Image (cartoon, rainbow, N blue to C red; front, side, top):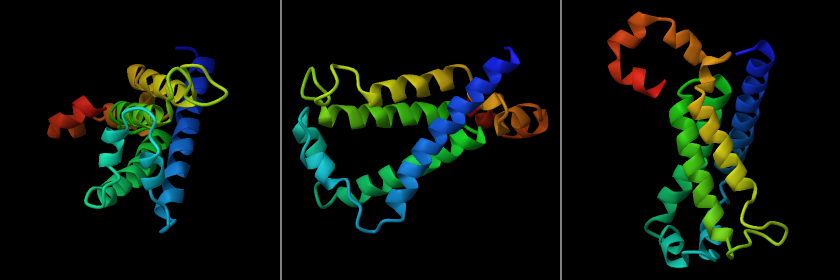
Length: 158
């Protein structure tokens, strides 16, 4: 891979990481934030999404959403566990896509494809090319065979 391609891949990873980190940390720091409104207004599969807004499940839904976004973003920015975090991030983007989808319009200005679809594809691309090995902690981890040898499950995650 050429230096220009590596730099662009690094920038895509860090920018997507910042985007997710910021979205998550603002939710963590706001005690009033809740996913209930978004989930209760789902247009596609409303019963499925409203289940996650029930009083028994909502605290877990909020926690996973807040900290999931924050930690996925942090992992992408640091370039560690990129494959795992990018796949989980893509799954979150799909979960964000369907509640707003009034087929075939995710919003008034889009037709089938919206920003969540683009983010999900970008995240899957970052996982596929092992973007954490380009100016990231995964490069350092993968170059230390003792660390990898002592923790075999780590090998699958990076």
